[in-house]
Amino acid sequence: MEKEKKEKKFISLLSDTTFKHFFKIKDYKEFFNTIIKPIINMDINEFRLYDPELNSGNEKRDYRLDILLVSDKVDIVISIEMNQFPSEETKYRNRLYLYAALAKSLNSGEDIKKKQIIQINFNKEKNPYISKASYSVMDINTHKEIKDFKIHEVYLENYKGIRYNGDNKEETYLSLFTATSYEELREIAGDDKEALKIVDELERLGLDDNFGLAYDNEEMQKRMINTARNWGYDDGKVEGLEEGKKQEQITIAKNFLKDGIPIEVVSKNTGLNIEELKNLID
Image (tube, rainbow, N blue to C red; front, side, top):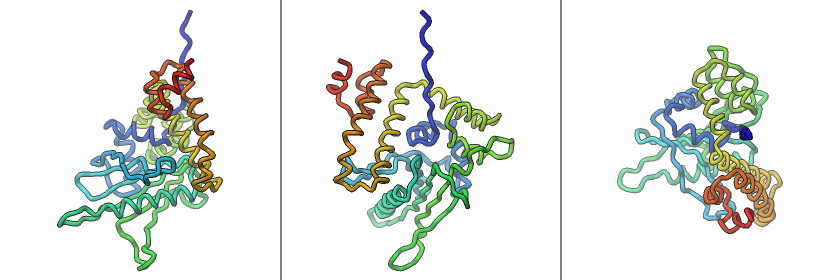
């Protein structure tokens, strides 16, 4: 009997998991430099990905920025947030995190140096007036600009529908973030080699069960956080979402166990312990 062809999962670029995967690979640095350099007027090839450990101490409500780029040559930290579910609440919390990062940027010792913080928000939303915006932050006490902190907003849906025409790489690459299928990705990329490399790798990842598990887990976590915030839940009420979250974890785990993913890998990415997963198998 001919083996059933495996279904290819669609993997979006607008994901922390996806961004991290590509940024760690040197071959894709030029893609990210094309979309980030015009925003900050700085080549990012010398920056590397850093996984921060800043957290609130409350694991259930912890909210951290997953993408920080740092350099050994310049005192600059670039924070990138992929906002699949953008809201004012989300942006506000992102900024709170960056304020904490800025406060902690003072190095101890005789030579005190401040790091410049640059935040870039890639928002899955449309702005009727502008496609990009840049902001400074003001000290509420002195009413002076905090020069070490800049915020840049990119409204990705403003780029939807753009296709590569041979002279619009930046706009084309941003348009890729809005795609919802591999067919649409290839239409956007046209014959641009850098864009096609991204699409080829996304299709490969769509067949990678381990990557798909991490991707699904991130999607689930972000949806739960976004739902809680949109409903105005406080700390106590958020506990009421835990059961729904657990059911989503179980659903994801069942699908991947069915596909033969090792139980240890499923446990690591869903938060379910080995005993719970064994019960699902039984």
